[in-house]
Image (tube, rainbow, N blue to C red; front, side, top):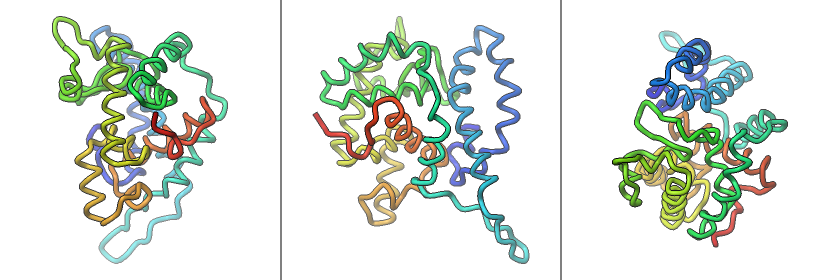
Length: 245
């Protein structure tokens, strides 16, 4: 699944939906694998969305000796899909208590407080979540990012603590926005890595998220529009129009 998320085509994720739904209860049934269950549960949405995109896409063109892949939808189409999927979605159970405090931390770091909702997309506000690649906590910080922004992993992993992880996530988002000058690019870099985003901006000679969106990793193509949809649902604001503090 981690490899498919890093692939180019969203529809390639669709085939993972069934296996993921089978394995999730097994992961949830053992304490040592529950962190991975929390991570997977927050990403079932991606697999379901990929399946919907596959069903709605026109059939691929079949040339002699080859099959043309189903092209990725535009970011606008993906955002429309997420808006529909999240239209009636309630707050995650842990968000009610967490969001007010997290907003204070983000505001203190001069980052739009609405961006605390990245925690819904990353972990559904489940601090136990841990990815196969090693990201952990509400904001799914990788070890190298945690170290970069002053978090300790021993004797306690501060990525699993809401306040330190929120502070580091906000600082990283501020750094990415200062680097790219655009919140959609910053959020894309938060998910895919700043190098992956910069490489595509250079390749396509652009500074626009829209110009590189369909060339980003499949997970990121779904991630950024989902963040946009969640911000619209929870705060009534557009990601691209967030003001820097």
